[in-house]
Amino acid sequence: MHELGQLGFFDPRYFLYVGPAILLALWAEVKVKSAYAAASRIPARSGLSGAETAQRILNFHGISNVAIEPVQSFLGDHYDPKKKVLRLSPDVYHGRSLASLGIAAHEVGHAIQDAAAYGPLAFRNGLVPMASVGSNISVGLIIAGIIFGLTGMSVIGLALFGVVVLFQLVNLPVEFNASKRARQTLLSNGMVTADEDRVVGKVLSAAAMTYVAATITAVLTLIYYVLRVSDRRN
Image (cartoon, rainbow, N blue to C red; front, side):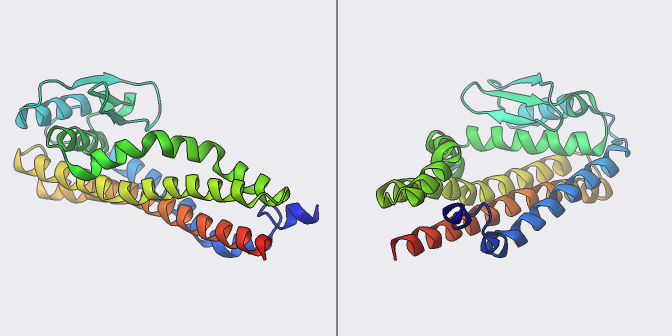
């Protein structure tokens, strides 16, 4: 139990380091749900659905190799660069609210980035395999290394978790850029008015805060475990 107390499970210092970021993440989650709910109640004056909005933006940018599909997942909207598929949740795919338009446009922003060979997106996508491995096993390696006094194992875990942090850091400009492209395209093509753009902006800004919170949490968690491994070595 003493060793576990040094690892972060029962160590109050963990919450001292990471607690504020966790609270920020919870606040961001509440904020995005609130902004989405509010914008969902406002019909878009264009009358377009999320899927129709996405298709119009793709056509405007001359992108013809991206399919649009519904996916049965609440706010599970995403762009798959490998399969060139834009997947939209039912409320976004069929919805005709400002929330639906904004989220659909944001995801199309990633397709536009892909078509334009946007560097940060390519870098982020290249990190996905290692970041996926790191998110699954890094903390386990760090903890096992501390318990059994295997510093090398902990260092490998820290390195893998570092890839996760790097992914989060690179992801921020990718997400902000996608939102910027989305709002610019919606406005320039008359799919939203200036007043509607402000509502869309609130939804996308709230969503961006969840990425900011996730990044801060990852960075502070890495710092915490680096300190725990260092303490164990000393």
